[in-house]
Length: 377
Image 1: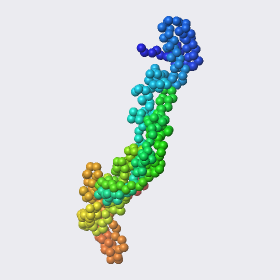
Image 2 (image 1 turned 135 degrees about the vertical axis):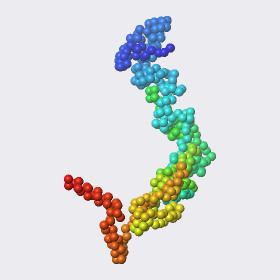
Image 3 (image 1 turned 120 degrees about the vertical axis):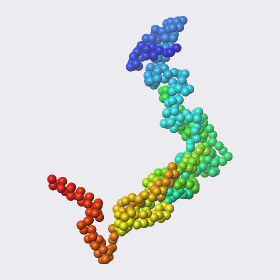
Image 4 (image 1 turned 90 degrees about the horizontal axis):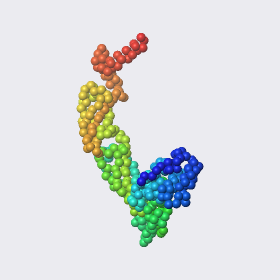
């Protein structure tokens, strides 16, 4: 049978203070007390109901739980001391607060072994190494399993004892009203075991500082920000728990010739004034060696030429990018007198038809003239 609302039982409002609740309870107790109603089962039930309502509503924590969750919040069948258990609210709040305070109910209440921490190693690569792939030897300082005690933390020939505070669960429970908060056991630190005779090498931790050498294969096509995961090569776990992982983080150094953007490579190629005007063939660098690039006549500085398949092979899709060459026309320097005369003759030959030979200049100066004309209007 469902229970009546406790405020309704006592005949008070939900905002009633403690004095009003006590006054209402006293009135009902006087009316339904068994001594005044011998053999009256209905009166006995009413007295019991009033007593239960009074007990909850005069306890601030129980009242708060009742106001929020109703009868389920104060049902003694769901856990001792006004808490919850058996798949009820304690499971919900226990998981939440357990995670917050380092406890939790995972593993059926048994202590969880503390896994080792993950590590990160920053690896610098040249562009050539990143594009082609490379095998690297890494020296990693970390906490490794103690050889003397085999990671147990106990002196050889001895073993850890079950913690007397948490009885091996690794957790202790604290109650505040109906909240049940699980925390790591302060005696064993959440391990569930206590080492009375610690190893004289690792002093009970089960781990010692070592520098280990690892060989790692860096796949072709990696770029800055990519990382390689080496499972189980991080710090050793405590008391034989699993080790963490090692993450090798890539950083590709700047290259004196090429700039990388995704799978494409870019470079600037200087060409002579004559080659730009008359056209010709030049050699350009690639990561696989030199290749010939045909320059058409009348090439302007800044023009881009694409060499397909000469970029980087993607580490994910295996698609190959391109090499994009930007030509830069160089102005001749350190000219001899004769060379200067020849250039002056060339410039003189343009007179009268300069717009024909310099199409960009015509458009530019027409724009400048229009700009100044508009200012004077």
